[in-house]
View (cartoon, rainbow, N blue to C red):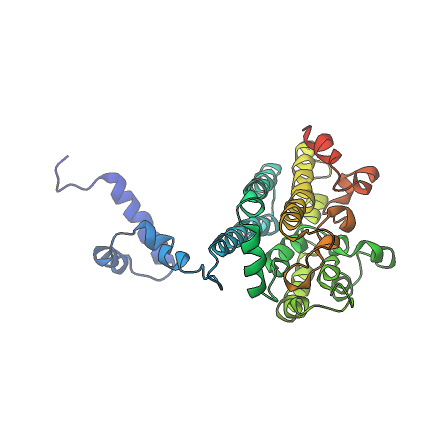
Length: 321
């Protein structure tokens, strides 16, 4: 081909671009001029590498605090991806089995990465260093992860997140404010001695409580549970969908909390007394799944499975491991 000739494929692409910008009332030639003067994109600019690497700012001179910060940031990035998939599920107006399964599989993959990588926290820090630098973090706590609370709210009925002892007095039809007042995680941020709200919880509620209530209202009819109930109860691929949802439930409400519990035991257990977590959170009662019995999709589990929620047999019965 003569160098002066333009490849017909490029001409076709230019035509499509012209149509695209014409719809928006824009002049394509102006955008082409911009391409002439713009610089080539680099990897470090695209992912904002310099900014990303500037966000780890330890509060002490203890070296292992860097691990603690970086891992929590890593966790929040994956929470963002999980919420990204949930948002797509809830927004899809004509959802198919394939679409739903792909999104659930992605969510399960993200949780799998988080669970597998938690050894960075469990075995990757010096215990003495941790017990020192954690005191500089007060009253901050991983309890204050708003994204994880949003994952919970967007996955199920808010009623399923009510503390276990209060569920008999409430119903799924109660207002979001009423249910949120009895949300299970509040009990995990009460002072061990007095039972009063910790500063950690007070800060958290002040910043996020209204946002959580509004989110619960929005997702009352479009949570993952509601999408399943509305679209897939009679699906030809119901077994696949149920298995994917059960895996998600187990990952979010058993394996992930148990990873945290294992880490807490590693760093905060000291005979004869347990060390309080940062922020004064009651990790001994808050982290074990058997105390909370938080289940996103209770109708997909037997009564016995829920009663024994968090026991080791779940791995054998569900994943055949």
